Each structure stands twice: as structure tokens, then as C-alpha cells.
View: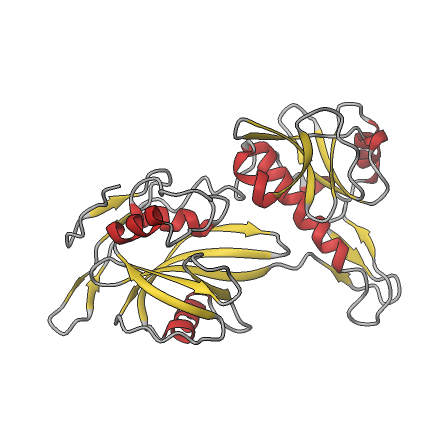
Amino acid sequence: MSSAPSVPGATHPGAEDGVAATIVTATADGTPAGRKLPGPVLSGLALARGEVDRSAHLRTDADWLAAAWADPRTRVIVVERGQALCELADDKARLVFSAPAEAPDGVQFLLGVDDDGVAYFGVAGPLPEASRPGVRAASLREAGPLLSDRDAGLLTHAVALANWHETFTHCPRCGSPTDPFASGHARKCPVDGSEHFPRVDPAMIVLVTDRADRALLARNTMWPQRRVSILAGFVEAGESAEQAVSREVAEETGIAVSAVTYLGSQPWPMPQSLMLGFRATALGTEITVDADEIAEANWYSRDELAAAIASGDLLLPPPVSIAHRIIQSWYGTELPGSW
């Protein structure tokens, strides 16, 4: 596959997300002279979609919740260990809902109400038996990109809450078991009255490019051979996301960066992260991996990346990830390879 030319000042539009990146030029001393990033931010991310209004104002309305649960139109997603029943066929997927009367015992959470007044709930409990061929348990990683906007948003919401309820069962202040309230969007300690809300861990993920517009890709020490992605790490206490970008890139590869530019975000509830996507410009090209988290890192032009994928030397992250979409926005068209 041919790649876009690396011409100073050229613009490479992303194939699907509308992100436009202008190649960095440099002054005589090598300092980046500036970049124009982005046009529209990343859109259509697999797990950042949704159509159903979350209806937060109804979460504490006991009468409405009881009536909605008794409504035969109400649909329930059962989530167990991050999976839900889906019907998968022909590179498409759709959620398989249960009626409230068929839902198992477990924590219930209101996911929202659609434009037709249909309520959607999640339940953290054992999955029902598959009712027909083609229906089976699937995770967000597998089904997320294949689901409709409605179903992707519902499942991401449900998995995030189910994961939290599975792990956050006791009060961190006094150790007493906590009780769900606000229709599963919070828990309360019956002893000291403290209220606790779902944990979200912000993490930055960044595509670093050099003056020649080559991309920095790395392999984590925990990954199999050939698997590479862009750099990522958690935002620390008292740190901005942009500061985290600079720190993590320097710690993992020894590269200093500038022009840190926000692109978009995607929830990653496996178990509780929020991925904040960025682009950044490298101030140098000499790589020194930390050998603790990063096994290897290298610069790739578009032609070099395409050749490495075609030869089987590299495997990129799958389309469900924001990493895939950020790399694609730089590459300029649909990424080659399989996942």
C-alpha cells in the first residue's frame, strides 16, 4: 500500500475521523516551528458512541424505576465478567436483551431511556442460556466495533458499572459492606453514611511523530512478539494529562516532546480507564527504552509501516482501541493488516 508523501506543510486527512495533521517544519536549530492539529477531533470511536439518553434525573425516582421494571417493553442487558450475550454474524453484532422477569438476581442499574420511552437496564449477574444459534457471550473488545451506536453505548455503560460493583463492595473508610443506590450509579455505606461513585482512571495515549513525520511505535514487555502500539500511561495525582504525556514518553523512550495536542477520548472499562488521546512532536529521535515497561521502540514512515505489516513483522492494535484510530489518522487511510 502506498503512503502519503512526507512533504513539509502537507495535510493528511484521516479516512474516517476527519482529523487533519500538518507536517511539522523546523527552524535552523531544529526546534519545531509549529504544527496545525487537528481539524475535528476523533469521532466515531468504537466505545465512545451511544444513542440512549442516560436519564440521570430518574435514577433516584423509586416509583418510576419500579414502573419501568414492570413495563414489558423494558430491555435488560445481563453482564457477567465483562461479557454479555450478543448475536454475531457477518461482521455485525447486536445485543441480546432479556425481559425484566427473566433477569437474574444482581445489582441493577438504569442505563437510560430512548426516544420512544423504552427503558434500558443492566444487571450484574450470571448470563442466561443462549436461545438460538449465533448467540453467545462476547466482550467489549470483540463485539464493541461490530455493534450499532445504540448497543455499543449501552454495553460500554453496563460493563463499566458491572466491573465497578464487582470490585467495590466495602467502604474504604470503615470496611463495612456498601449498598447500591442511585440505580446502581453509586454505593453508600450504611454505617458512616459516606457515598462512593464509580472509579475512573484517566490514562493518556499519544502518537509521537518526528520532523520527518515518522511515527514512534513501541512494544510493551508484556506483549507478544511483533505487537506494537503508541505510548500510553496513567495520569498521576496532581498532574495534567499533557504533563503525563511528556513524562511518560520521556520515561519510556527517552524522547522529549512538544506541541502536545488533544484529539479525543474513549472509555476503556476493562476495568475502569478513560483513554485520553493526543499527538505530540518529538524534539529528538534517539530512543532509549526503559526496559521495564518497553521492550523496544522504533520510528516508522508510512511506507515502512505498511511493509512491516505486509511481511508479518508487525501487528497493530485492533479497531476497538483508540490507538488504532490515532495511528490511522496519521497514516491517512484505512490501516492494512488483520487483528
